[in-house]
Image 1 (cartoon, helix red, strand yellow):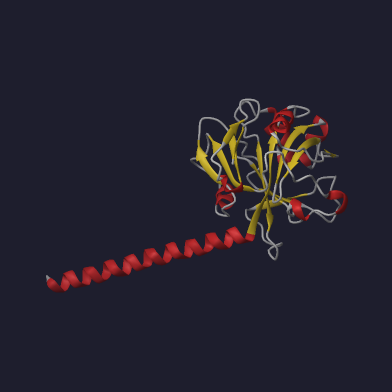
Image 2 (image 1 turned 30 degrees about the vertical axis):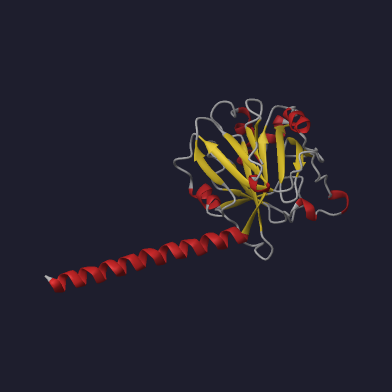
Length: 257
């Protein structure tokens, strides 16, 4: 009986050590992922013209450059911060958005069904310096006409899953405060925001993430929680002031600082 108890205790210690080792390995993997990838930008699909951007400007954000994505059928209005960007995106040309090779992105379907169950967001990552050849999730190479033939964007293989955000990784992405020349953007905002430090997606479909979305969650650049409707919370500068503004229902966005 005593011998059995000692053996059982040793077994418990061995099992406990194994569990601690596994947790430690996951912790190291999580830290490595966080160092390998950076949050590049969030896009939110909107109505034509993204009039919601005017509310962001009235709040104190300074709007940066906008563009038409020739051949992709989309246009945008953007707000830049030191480390990342917020993009309001809409369908500019339906025929382009539905054409080859654009249709596989499902931007058209995502936009037209965003009030009928489709997730209206895109989560875009960039590799950290030295990890340019590493993609966070299973992907396919997207070559929109507005890019040179030698460039591509990695799009998650879950792009058909409209209940999840479109997942994108841009190998040539960089922090807006590293833009140079005519690419530089206004980074000083009336509300004083500098960096996006939290991105949290609230989703009715959060309970069963695809392997691609799970891989993004493991980079520690995105949090996910269940909710009755889609929206995103953006936290700025560590949210030390404890303040928040809700731009719903016009824009599925909450900003905390």
